[in-house]
Image (cartoon, rainbow, N blue to C red):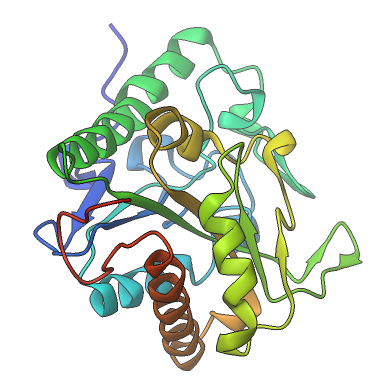
Length: 266
């Protein structure tokens, strides 16, 4: 029998905050943490890898928490690094357990035995997936449709190429909410937002949206902030505020009150 991956002191692989929040929005942050379970040590990675963007989305959790407070919205986030398992990837995806992240090698993920891979799926991905599904189900009903918003960040430079946008608004085949937000972004002083930037569905980044929102007809969007805009508290405050106002304006187009539970959708 495989040894337990998560020792008791590591705790659950996910955390839900503001579970009784009254907003119809459910916030998700899959790349919130750079923590490695103790039983996996450092995954053989270099120290700078474990503090870099390779390990987590810098600033994403703090921004999501501030947005959660502004909206009174529940927030679910992964408690372990995506280098262990990326909860925004399905089990069959090669990069669900990455061997490389940009220029960063993750030696202990190479040639991972199937038993060890299945253990990470069972102990990290499945509990996170089920917890999010349960949260959505608990807040759904004939007159209640949650809105799923996932929060991420990207690096200013990737493989030596500079990225000049502040924010990306991503969607899969359901583009309704992203369209509304892009149309209204300039009202919040966001003049350089871009659709499906710096990634898109073909890059495999919309797994959470597809699984938990698109197939159920729920409004959804994935928000990507440039990490140098949200790596300090003032930046997190600024962008959480802008995002709250932008979401509120966009959801009004769907007759949804962002501050009230149980929205009635036209």
